[in-house]
Image (cartoon, rainbow, N blue to C red; front, side, top):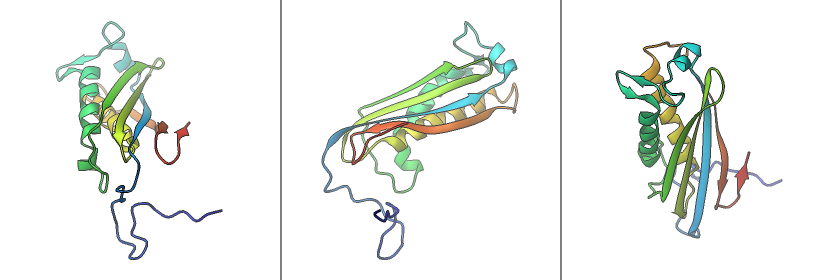
Length: 161
């Protein structure tokens, strides 16, 4: 079994360090992340046309999709040592997943030397936090749970949950 090192630490000094991707091949990279939110019956019953919830702050899901996309694009500003990348694509999707839950997913794609899983995870996180912010007037009993990477392709090793 080979010893694994933390990728964002300089092995000689132990200091934080950005990963050097200069020698990596340019490949098409893809990542998808998701999370579940428990909104509760009261909030779910407020959905208009079974597809959108409108509050005084505006349409919740549409706003969360835009916020998730913006968050994914700003990942390197939010997560230390992430490389700034120009994503080729980012899609945030929100669907009803039961009486009290929704499922948020974010898929990202880039042609480059580094992956986009952190962008997908950030997109899902920001979309979920936006929904929480817009719905907390109904109830604070909202759960953001099961955030996870679903899959990634195009780097050293692929992953699929």
